[in-house]
Amino acid sequence: MFGDEVLATAILDRLLHHCDLISINGPSYRLKNRLAAIERETDVA
Image: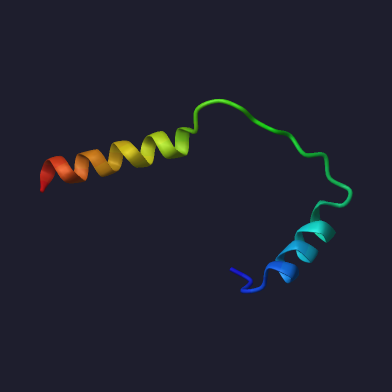
């Protein structure tokens, strides 16, 4: 998106400096829904 890994790292560092990061483990509902949509598209075709 930014085209430069160093620039992207610097921007993220500035944004996340005072943030609390929460690691969420478990199934991805976004991925699950996307895979279901792809499966429906292939069934229709």
